[in-house]
Length: 148
Image (cartoon, rainbow, N blue to C red; front, side, top):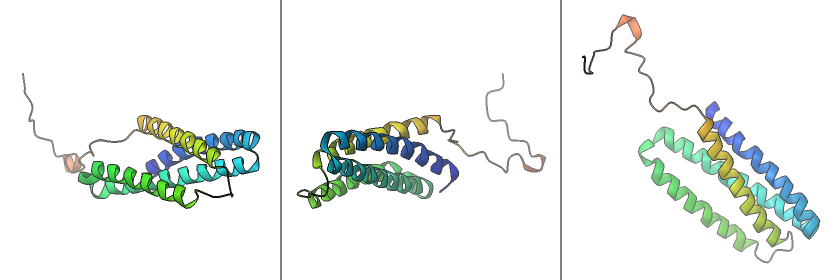
């Protein structure tokens, strides 16, 4: 991953982990040890799902920019489907508290989205790559604009 992508990933994952830690403490106080485990599992699921999604979207944007928007929509639908499968697999689990898991999952997802949005807004991304051939060997670009 290019350094800008890693920076955005870190700027989204760190606040999500902090929200997950707070959720684990609160869930531990409210629901006991199983609540804390549920919050930790939810935080790990959010960071894995959203981080993998960000990675896939960045690769798609670089290799197939014309499919970026469609890939984003498909990716989010796939993430929701995978989350439903995960929830169905652990529906009757006694490993963790499902309510603490659900609340932590929503809090972590909202934290990720907010942090990723902030990271993208602060990132200095070139929308147009400068043409290196126009400035090499003393070539002057043609004047194409209005000259008044």
